[in-house]
Image (cartoon, rainbow, N blue to C red; front, side, top):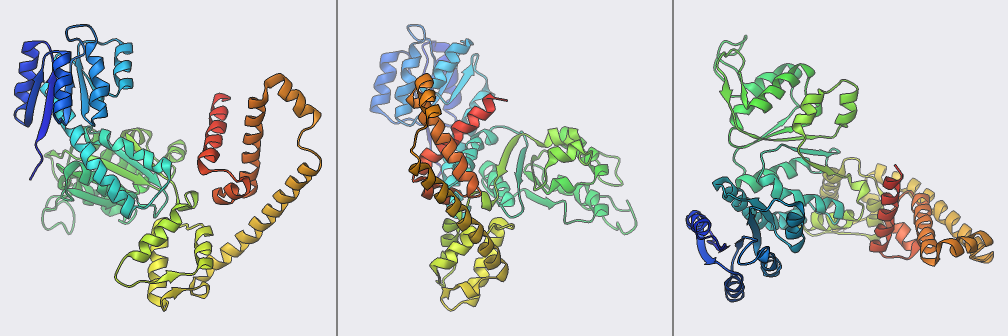
Length: 469
């Protein structure tokens, strides 16, 4: 049974309030307040999902007091105001409002807010599903999910970048489900898997007699995606001759099947994905710039597994726990799997674990691993060991000669201890991190610092580099 939405309308203008209440009654239960005191009373006594807040009640900007109170109760807060001053809008968002809409109120604004509110509810489930099936603790990747509520209320395209095997198709399906609540209307077309001379007929369809062998009409994927999602996987492989025709179909949402003079309409959400660098392809003339600009919108850039190695133990646990049969991995094997670069990413890891589970007798040992994994790791281990020895030797030399020299003391005199310590921290993190081939876990072990402190220094370095550009 669908949950009824509870609204609170806080508006002192009677006509404006009645107009909004009338619209909201069609989709939920509505309570009203025409002044600050009444609004605070209702917020204390009742539960509401969405609050519509006028800023100017009995006094100017009095409604700003309501925003943090509503926010503290987990209420989705929407400001409705005729004020257009940037300072006012900024203040409302700083206090915690979720949306700021201009008066006069339009019905479409109500639809936008409702879609966004429902998306936030779905987003919690999506994140939970993401955590269980697309396992990651990479904060940068998790943060990208924040755009999902914006995707739901916009028809802008989605562009997913990432190496083969990182889960681009999975993300495309989840975005579609978030918008449409089911998998119906999700049309997946991998441009790299279909011969070039067949792509046009697959996408646009054809009429009987359009070419030799066309003995009946065939719907194209564009038509099948009407009202749903068209997912163009590996779009970088799309032939140049077809890119212009595809661009027109995306722009106008109309197209002509082969052999037809009648335009076919299709209203679809476009999601594209590639493992290639489209920016470079555009510069080299291998991909149309106008099509590139058209498929970009909400962008997700999924890092390869080798750049988020901390996810590997979580993925191992997840894949080992799937199915009814249970096996375990020896500690030295886990270490080998952790240091392997996984060029096939999550897909490769999943396949390797499935094979190992089927072959081993309950305990996965080193001799069970494919040779290429063991060989690569042994080479990496030797290099890592040498790097650690060099770092340890140089650090010991520094301590033997004393920590501070005259130049450092002069630096402290002119810039202060705080600035000096920040500089030491930055140089130490940079040197150790680069010496160990950017391996985070080994760097943290040598530096003996928390991951939060480590990334704080890296962010500081990045900001410093950006400022210097």
